[in-house]
Amino acid sequence: MSYNLLKGKKGIIFGALDENSIAWKTAERVHEEGGQFVLTNAPIAMRMGNIKDLAEKTGAEIIPADATNLEDLENLVEKAMEILGGKLDFVLHSIGMSVNVRKGNHYTNQNYDFTTKGWDVSAVSFHKTMQTLYQKDAMNEWGSIMALSYIAAQKVFPDYNDMADNKAYLESIARSFGYFFGKEKNVRVNTISQSPTPTTAGTGVKGFDGFIAYADKMSPLGNATGMDCANYIITLFSDLTKRVTLQNLYNDGGFSNMGVSQQVMEAFVKSQEE
Ligand SMILES: NC(=O)c1ccc[n+]([C@@H]2O[C@H](COP(=O)([O-])OP(=O)(O)OC[C@H]3O[C@@H](n4cnc5c(N)ncnc54)[C@H](O)[C@@H]3O)[C@@H](O)[C@H]2O)c1
Image (cartoon, rainbow, N blue to C red):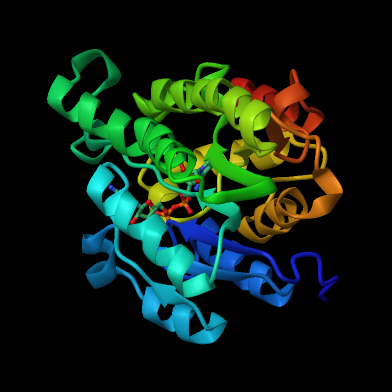
């Protein structure tokens, strides 16, 4: 169903790798709502995923960019404005990667080159993206910039490893840059803290199956899906949420405010009896 919420709006969507990606589902929904966009991802993701199918489906052009590389970002923002014929109304940063997680390093045994790389990709790239947009004056007034986070930024989830620290940093950047973007350009900046979602990045986390099942049983509304997240993002790109800014917004079926649920308690008691 389309509400035409994004008719006439233009933007950039980072991070669509395959049809499970949150960015992929968001691109499909933005397209349905009448928005136009450029798709971007790291050059290596062009070979791994199938972003070309998404581009065809949504009438979008693809501009490869490593989100940690300022030259790539400058080229991306300039080309996107050329292609779309003007300034941007929305930007989605849907990027995350921890080298320590990938290599199976425990949180207490990090390789700090990996830590730095993961921090750059997962958090600082959001600052770099916003700084490039800001300096090029690439955002229209009342535009909206979003990134994706996870509750491990606030509470301990041991297997989320150094991504927990990266997400805390990411959320802080959203507030700090959001102040200047709001004050100077009337642009809002927010993060969505999303339920565990079965994507390439999500399933890379150790014990993901347990994680996702536990969260589902803890949440009164169950886990938010990738499509639920895309739908939420659409509202935050629309003119209906003009003064929502500097927020970390939970899209998690209620998980973040739960202590324990009956279902989880019953499963625990049962396991104690066995
Ligand atoms: N899946 C979950 O459980 C979950 C939960 C909460 C938040 N998130 C966040 O959602 C966002 C999207 O992840 P996803 O779950 O859709 O997984 P995904 O694997 O589909 O997307 C991650 C994307 O990051 C891109 N990327 C990695 N390094 C990059 C770089 N240097 N430059 C540009 N792009 C780069 C990848 O190519 C990929 O497209 C991430 O920020 C992730 O941390 C995911």
